[in-house]
Image (cartoon, one colour):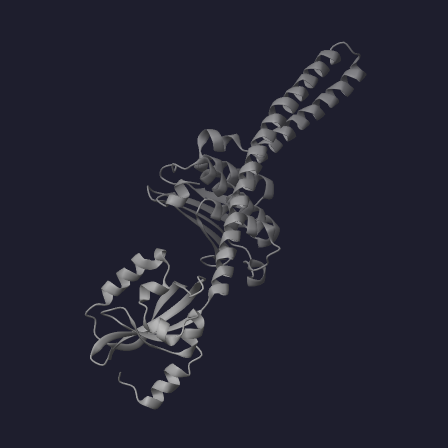
Length: 353
């Protein structure tokens, strides 16, 4: 080994990190420091009698074999390269996670491998638990969104059919009654009938807001065009929709999520943007769909962008995650805010949504 004795003692013997050397031909230990002995629970003689496979669980054997085969014949490289996280087996049967760095060197004319390890068992377990927790949260969020949309559909149908029909029947009854009354009373009934007319229109608007029929019957592009027109009519802000050359073929979850992101974006424009125009663009091909909503308002501050209490932005991010899409919110081409949603149609995660 091309190290002076003093340097060797400082780096190897006295290191607080577990370090060991093994023979690349026989896979047996050549040397190890005290930290390695303490980590694995063996004496020096016990560890020298073992091979690398004796301190690994059986599940790690294929991965270890592949790495060792790839190292055969490689020249000595004094640089410590990261080898990732590996599972090791201690003398008392515990499994530990070690983050490993390694380099190949020559020891007494034989190819050897120097290993420097760091025990990250607790940190790794916490990371795994966090990922599992996030996975459960995402699954719950997806389920809640599905339930919410199902409830919107049912509520929209109930309001439109039952309440709408009842009001229509009431209007007919009022019309029949008015014909039997004197002119003064007839005027009062007709005024009531006009009020019922307005209620019928309000019921239709509410049902449409809950779940636009155009989305289910005519597709996403038609629904977005309708939404742009409605937005202009209600807010007075000009909204231009640029449709795709062909309506994309999407699952119901994908179409609904993109439509809801558009709705929430337009709501944010009204509340915060102080914009005069909005441009909505839907692009699609066989591999991807891209939705862009851009306004000419005052823009979105970084503080509000990072505000975790902003439920609208959080809802948009969750809907994008729900279908495996990428959502980005930033400044527009000249000013204002641009919301960009990119959905890959070839992603397995998306197809299984």
